[in-house]
Every structure is written in C-alpha cells, then in structure tokens.
Image (cartoon, rainbow, N blue to C red; front, top):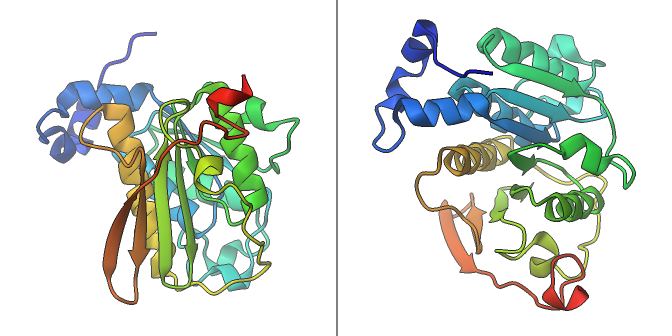
Length: 249
C-alpha cells in the first residue's frame, strides 16, 4: 500500500510539518503508524485526543469499562450524555469526528494474560493509561515480550510520573518497581493532573514515531502539581529483573 499525503492532510498538518526534522517525511511516519492506548480514562482521553489530532494512522483504544458520573471531572472526552456507554466507544466516536483520516478502533475488552499480546501485537508504540498496577505490569511484560516501546504514566492527586520503556535497552517497569505498589480502589485526582501527564505521553509517542528529540528512555519524570515542578530521575536496568533481566535467560 502506497502512503502519501492528500492536499487536505497537508493543510491540516501544516504547522507541525514546519518543525525542523519533522516535515512531510515525519507526517508520513505518523500516517503509517499504529498506536495502542490502554485505558480510556483521564490519561487516555488526553493521549488519544492529541494523537488523533496529530494524524496517527491507526489508533486502538482498549478499555472494558463504562462511563460514570464521577469520571467527568477528568475524563474530558466523556460527556454527561455518555454516562453508561463503553468508554472505548465513547472516545472513538469523538476522535472520528475530530479527524476522519485516522482509523480508530474501539476494543472494550479487559486485558488478561491470554489476550494481551494478541491485542497489542503489531503496534509501533503502546501507551499505558491505566489506573491499576496489576494490569500495568501485565502490559509491561507483554510489551517486553513483543519488543514494543511503551510509554508509561501514573497519576494521583496533583502528582504524576512517567517514563519510556524500550524493551531490552532501557529499564522496564518491573526494573523500576520490583515490588508491586498497593492497589487503591478509589484515589484522589484533580482533573488537570491526567491532562498534563496525558499530553506528555502523547508527546513522547509522537517523538518516538517520528524519530525526533530526546525521549524519557532511562529516565523517570516526576511532576508535582502543587509545587508546579518537574524532577528527572535516572533509572537503571536490573540484570536480575524477572521480566527483562539478562539473568533470566
């Protein structure tokens, strides 16, 4: 299949194609790309909005849950009229209106050990927009096994963290967190926190696809919204990591 930009696409993406080292070549890379976003909540809404606007070719959204009233302070692609609808479907419908040139796939399924690799297989980048550690680590293992870069973010209150994982080149999520943090069924969130981290996740995914700039690979970015500060922490691979460590082979 031949990929080229239509005149409409050239006009739509004109401003980003003006960026040095981006141009039409970078836009074509986006058009050819396949990105899977796992989670259509606060993070996922921000991530998918900007990926679709930028012109990612195929955008798959995985989330089994339905929209609830308590989601609406932060999950900005879900509106009052969407309460009760599947989140993946709700997001996909909005994105198709935003950019009809993007193929949006809604997958209202829960990730399991049995289906995760099949659902993410073939992706150029996977974006972790989840809200629980169990599924995050499951996704981390699958991305390492499939050798797919994963952009991770987690948020709570006015705090957020993110990193980029390149399998067997950078620390994976299990290297960074050898012990699984305790789960919280409900935790505080100011709506702008996933907005900030979600935009940064989209930023990372776009840079990885186009091949510009420096990624967060090997670094953990910590955001403190109360102090309005960012801190960058170097992280190292664990050779004994149960997921990506050299000693497991």
